Image (cartoon, rainbow, N blue to C red):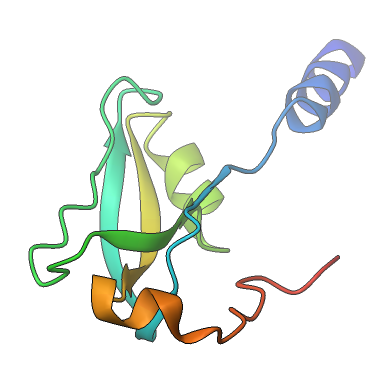
Length: 109
């Protein structure tokens, strides 16, 4: 029983969270939009952000596990891990030279 408890403790101490952020210097246009996706088989496949409505590309992309994702990951034995992708479209080239400062995308920790 002690070995099982120790193994469970080691297993939970080795878990972590997932977050990926990509920022471009392009000014943001509009509010963040989000999509749900999933990573399968311990991260061998992942969801992608193909934002066709962003005519001038993406200004910011954040991909992370929602708070409930580790629960799903444990119950499916690592086969499925839900992901959330949030993105902001970039402004067009006519708005780049207006001198407006871009506010930070994510507040500091």
